Image (cartoon, rainbow, N blue to C red; front, side):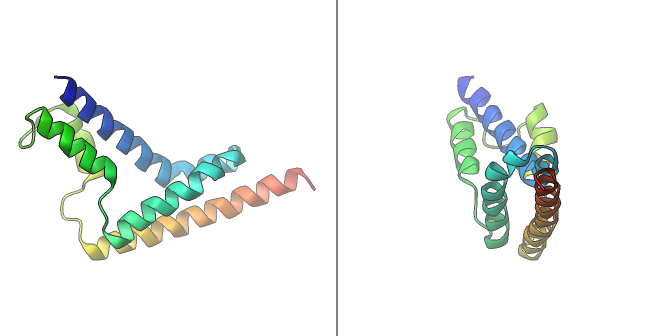
Length: 123
């Protein structure tokens, strides 16, 4: 049971990281210091998508699910609702590259807006 709980915790953390990578740029507009955590997070997220790497959290989650005897058809909340967001079905290499480039474009725009707003305060 503990391995299933840990596996679910890892996927929830993974999901939270993905949300931060995608939407954290907006946070930098109001809290500029978040940019120091957001830039490396976006760099990692974009690299994983663009190069088709597998995140180490995925390996950890799979290992925990294997230890819990759950690799296969799970039907819990995490499996039904969060897993399809973290690992969408039908994801291709081309779509991964497009996602990575869109992620960079979106966040660079938000960082520039955050930088502009941040520097206005000190002028």
